[in-house]
Image (tube, rainbow, N blue to C red; front, side):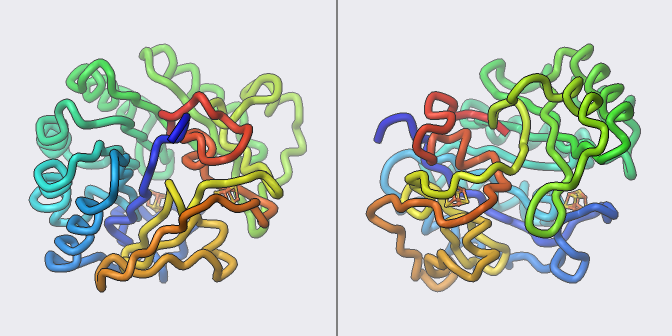
Length: 287
Ligand code: SF4
Ligand code: SF4
């Protein structure tokens, strides 16, 4: 395997303690979580994966699962050889973040913290993020994600400045609408934020990689809160790419890559882990 960081994105909780108006998951879908026995079976499956994988825990909100720090993280650390990454809204208590930091010491790869201004001020968020980064191992990649809304580029620019002034990395995501990304009438304001032709490591522009060879389903897959495994999120949205279920032991990965048949690739993880031919091949650690 060259240039590819094998990665699973595991939705450990459907539920979230926030209710952002722009959440891509509807409140109806944003509920449910695996129970202790299902978590156990998922960890068994991860333990049996060949080689070294990155298990990226997301949600909903990962820390909102009551077993996240008591079973999920310790189980991944003790029973698998893999590294861990997390995507969170950073609302967990400082005590819980300290527990997470201690549990994952030496095995944490990427900590992605999403800034949601509907629920937290940028001041409070940056202060907490800075404290956390100071406690993490220096090798952990820490990134602040933020959705940039059309017409609110100035607000995003102010947040970017504050995040970067604290020595943290800011990663913009364009606002997604059904079937693609929203229109941004003020091209100059957007350009000022994103710069020239940002790659998948600089911004999430949800591009199309149709026709490129992709190793999703081989070296990358997603797992939903119900244990269902999919080759990638876009495939799932089209009802394709089902790889079985971790809770009943039916996960079957593909043997070979295939040409991407989709018009939008909304997640940066496959691109930044080297899964897509000719895209970010050298960039294996990112948001
Ligand atoms: S924090 Fe994330 S998952 Fe939770 S409601 Fe907001 S956008 Fe949705
Ligand atoms: S390029 Fe993106 S959308 Fe296409 S198959 Fe790969 S992960 Fe899925």
